[in-house]
Amino acid sequence: MVFKRMPLEVWFDEYQFEIDYDIGESGMKFTSLKNLGIDLNEVDLRYGYHLGHPDLRKEIAKQYKGMTWENVAVTTGASEGNFAVIGHLVGARDHMIVEHPTYPSLYQIPRSLERDLSLFRLTWNNEFRPDMDELRKLVKANTKLITLTHPNNPTGSVITEDELKEAIEIVEKAGAYLMVDETYRDMMFDNPPPLAATMSPNAISLTSMSKTWGLPGIRIGWVVADTSVIQAIRAVREQVTICNSSLGEAIAKAVLKQRKALLTKLRKSMLTNFRILKDWMNNQKWLEWIEPKSGVVGAPRLVRGGSTDELCQLLVTKYRTFTVPGSRMELDGHLRIGFGGEQEELTRGLEQLGLALKEIHK
Ligand SMILES: Cc1ncc(COP(=O)(O)O)c(C=O)c1O
Image (cartoon, helix red, strand yellow):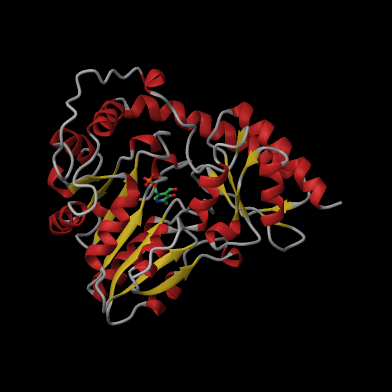
């Protein structure tokens, strides 16, 4: 078993604090306690409930029709949820399938654990849509878990309800589980497909407070699933983090209580930013894209072809603008542009991107 660093996180660790304009992050602009008006003075700084505070679990369960708080495990971001679900469900002799591209830990965890892994590719030629016939072909007798990420990071592709139903049929027939990483689901431009966990006991929903709410610093995410999976998650997490940060849980609870009002505001800003990016894309000649269908990321590629490493490196060092080179997400030739930030930052960052593109095309 070998845990190697993930190239995407190496890139973040190296440059995320060295820039003026961030147009690479995959969430809404980071917020603060002051912005949210949350007072934490009364929070007890003790160990918490190992599956999350019951009040928080109850608040979360309200979003999942037919599920109760006992179907919810609050985790240290979606990252710990991923680790716990994969660690529990996929044993040494088991096989799993991971939709690709996606956030890299989804495939890096099974690689580190030396599990048998197949990648289910979203391709440019299919407009990054999941092809269910291709998925069916990848299933083996020992497949235990399939993971999908929708809205997808970094392509912005969105699965339809019918496709989701097909994926569930596939896992039910195989005696396996489907985990859908729904981290970007609250950022749907229009009606989202149903929450996976509400559709079948073989389906697991995973999400995070990091992206929609601009709160990666509180490290709160959760898994919604059958209670047998939830209990197993507790066993894994007790060996890693034990419980969540009590401060993180308190902030999550306060934010979720204002969920509807905050979402309306965030969606407005997300849609305005998407329009800014779309206009910019339409008025330049070096990049082409499959338009994101939701979320706040897209993955254009260079019209002339080739790697985007040089471009992103130049951008970050000379133009102090942060994007993500596709090579860091096993999607070389593309770059991730995030449009969840402040309007001014996005506009200025895109201007810098234009200058860097001009420079590499000289
Ligand atoms: C699809 C997806 N899942 C999970 C994560 C991890 O998020 P966190 O651990 O901050 O909740 C990310 C982060 O970018 C992501 O894009």
